[in-house]
Image (cartoon, rainbow, N blue to C red; front, side):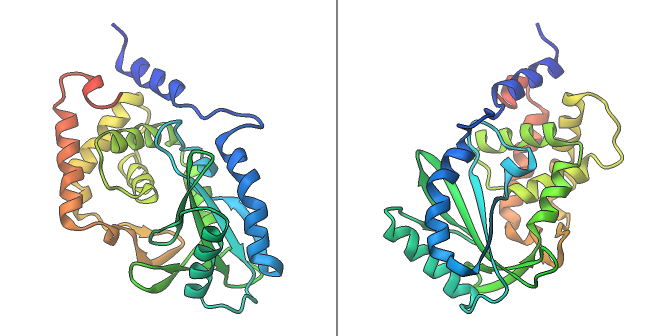
Length: 254
């Protein structure tokens, strides 16, 4: 019999992302960067990873690759036009883009990739405006700050375990919302072992999460907790309750 901490450690080892030239991120960037450069032209500011790969919270299984396309403030098109034109450009290059809330989802060399187009608000900060297709509006955010908060939170192992749990239980739980929830659950919690920390997170999701108000730290007007309905939050809380009553850790996450 192995300890709960060792069990979770073994899962993290198994789910570690390969390093080197042929990582999924590098393979996808090699294909996508020329296409995105051609689309953006002179208005391109940068093409960078922006999700779990950049934050260090990616797992080998079930993780989308997020590519953030930053356009210069002088870009003439509206945010909706930027989003629609990128959709058409990807389609014209042989992809089948899926319209998501702020991104376009495509398959690249067998990997799921979310491409997020955004326009810098000025030349001096990393604040960006991006289009929210579900509400047909725009929002301000700062992906660089998101990456910094999560990458340096000291809770990346617990986040990776909770992401695996989310995926394996089929829960609708946006990644950044999940990451901030884990950070909040473990705030002022000192090391009680990896398994103890995961239990603390599940307890938070069961008891406090459904009514917790979670805001984008880069824009307090962007309420991340509004991304899920009360029913979706209740499903997460119920799954956490079931996990806490599980007879063994392999019933929680595999």
